Length: 136
Image (cartoon, rainbow, N blue to C red; front, side):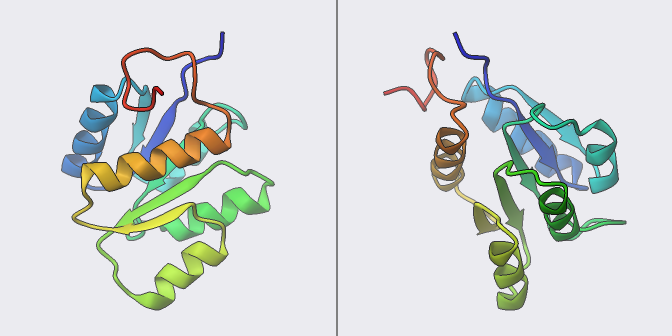
């Protein structure tokens, strides 16, 4: 029996963290939330998280800095960027750094779920769960 996938959420906006956390709760996906990239990295251990949802613009290190740092460490954790930043240069940087997706706010629940589903399938984190949108 495989363990339930754990998703990390990194966003400096408490309302966004809560909304994303609530969505994952409905999907039966455990998550941990962090208010900045540095807080996530202080808790990061390879294999602890199966997917990361991160904002771009945050105090301290940005979500892009975090993504690039994880890749330098050799991490292949899927990273979904959820941001209000519609700049094509920022999007290109995120995708070329290995982001799974670059979603601009407001993000529909369906769109985020589809990208989460793909990300968690890529890491083998799906299966064994019951009653989630990811079954079947």
